[in-house]
Length: 195
Length: 195
DNA sequence: GTCTATAGAAAGATAGAC
DNA sequence: GTCTATCTTTCTATAGAC
Image (tube, rainbow over all chains, first blue to last red; front, side):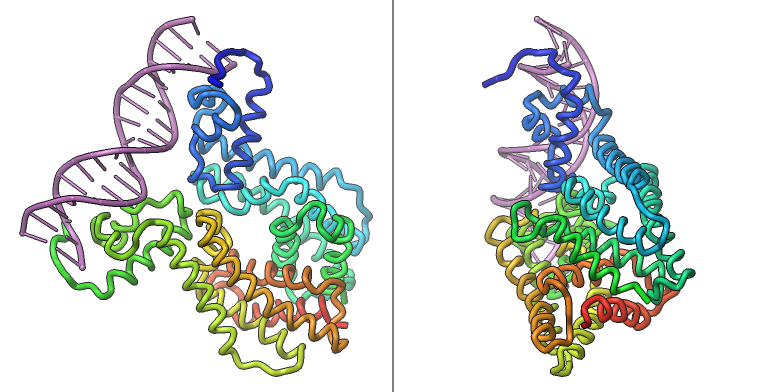
């Protein structure tokens, strides 16, 4: 083929990020070369450096964008004020949002270790922000007597681990719809923490 | 230092595996070089090839050993016959066993993608065996009317994801003992699935 | 903005001395 | 059983033509 020409590219940047996301999620950050990413996009390796200063920054940008989007989407999510309603909204939101972005979810949990200390801290802080959203719901519900989880912090981590696990097995067009999966998990979460 | 000599080694094999386990878990399989492993052990890179034919086999052996050990330990675990007692035994066993091997647990969930198809299938089959142990408990309990989880297969995956998550945050000497963690998770699991 | 070409470092794996 | 040395490949990143 030998693609030769073109300055068709305000879209090359996004395409590079999309290709990197897919390949990093599939094979792991360290196992993917800049040449593979370039080949997936259809450019030469050198061209990538017009869009990112180096490989780690490319990873960092993907993770940062994912976390920013997650927090913004949750803040925009309609929900009630009672702890039980807020918890149900969180459970259904987390499953739905993550099922739309399985590659980014996978990266966010697996490839933090490939970041330098400063970049690592930045992503960790955002992840912590998100956990705090759920923890606040559980704390409010515990005070109100709605919930009876024996440990609010651990319940937070347990629920997030359980919900995030959905992305590892869910297949579009399988025996369960997303809504049905949401129903099942909400049933388990509700019973696990309610008084 | 420049270590020079020695044929002091029926123990070099295990030391190589221990070093590889630690480094793979910390940095990821693809990010760790054979030279790094050799340096951790205190030998030269070439010496590693007396103990493994290649890097992937080294990873495979670690994963295989971990899964074999997990299944053997569960089969040896004392437990009752009633579904509720078996479920409690499983929850406490899983937490305790995995907290003793955080590096191996991490590898088992993160580095399967670095195996070739045959090796991948072998590890997947063992992981499936283990999941089936829990699924059988939940199925028996559903038939007996002890459990009321809306979907046995999903409850299996949800519980394992929740329990395995412990290894990502638990720190020895933190505010909670292992037994206390086991109590808290057992409380949540029991309420999530019981009728 | 993308290409070709390459510098410079590091990787996996092997050969042969001791 | 381990070492030194090296083959061969591949990598990240850069330089300069177009």
